[in-house]
Image (cartoon, rainbow, N blue to C red):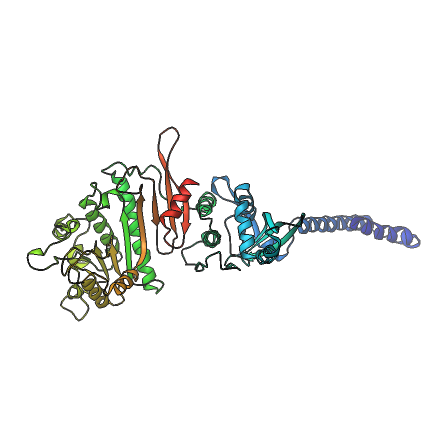
Length: 519
């Protein structure tokens, strides 16, 4: 169209103005000028066409600029949105995953719990005997900007069917709280990706509608679509084989070390409390099993202390002393000789060694009590920055509660991190009512004031049998959720894998984990 316009103007100049043509033709070089004009018109036309095609293929609206298709490693393609709060996983992938037949019951339950259809059904079924039903629901749209889910619910009432479109936010609470629990909302943290935050908020809704088995599949979906490493248990750990391989111990030491350093940073930023605890109970660190190895506990303490000292932080490793009265003074069997072994083990702190001078300058030893907390005004010239307390626990007998000395030590430490490793602060049988009903709630509140920063525990059959290992329960860092895994052997018996089956913001109970194993 543009070319014809320019050509028409040129012909009008030559033909319509033919009276002056002979005069123009008499000028020297007029033909070259006309050819140049035609060429210029052609160039303008080509540029106009190219700009039009480009604007059609790549519109310059804000909605289109915000979405860019990028090819990432492993051949996966993801849709990233610069203006969206969620990135890394395609909306279409989550939609297809949730619309499978397996999750139809989940979507129906969410429709009944979080939308007005549920309240309408409760009102109409009170008079019609349950004839108002939602028999299917599908995801239409996932709006990452406002974090809402839009569903098409197929409702059946009075032998008539209709499709009703509803939506609800990810942080929704049940409209009828008589049948569904109300759970705390999921808070975000700087080290949590947007994909993880979205999945964890969705898993909260799954717990509200009492379908926890879906949460594990959402973690599997996240692990299969996320770019970069995800904190899931490694395959082929073979924890049933004792003693463990060295790389297995090192793997858990590294996980615990990363959690400790992250917790110390969070404590410094006032995101978590300075009272922390970590539980590492794979078979070699489980004192209730005959596979318990005190050398593994020593290696764990050394690994954590050196990792903290490498950040120019002074750490004190504390082991509780003897407790009791008179001839009944003793130590728990798990801690017998531990303090002496800590000081005698090889720290490679001698002259010319890898950790030269680390003992005394950055790592010190002590017991549990306020007398072992040194500040800038105390007897010690150096102030301890972090306290590691190994396996504090109560004992059977008189004056055998560790709660009192531990409480005094925590209060004397102020706002400095105090980390309990494999604590057992439950009440034991005692005389004089020391660990009885009196003051029990106060002791429980003190124990609950310690926040879990790392947890790894193997799951077994009920009873005293510790074989085979059914799975594991983990919490990889303070900001990570609790995840229960099921151990599964490969078909050809060439290895084993740990598959996530349950994920929760709080520690899941055994019933929820067992039901997910069976589903």
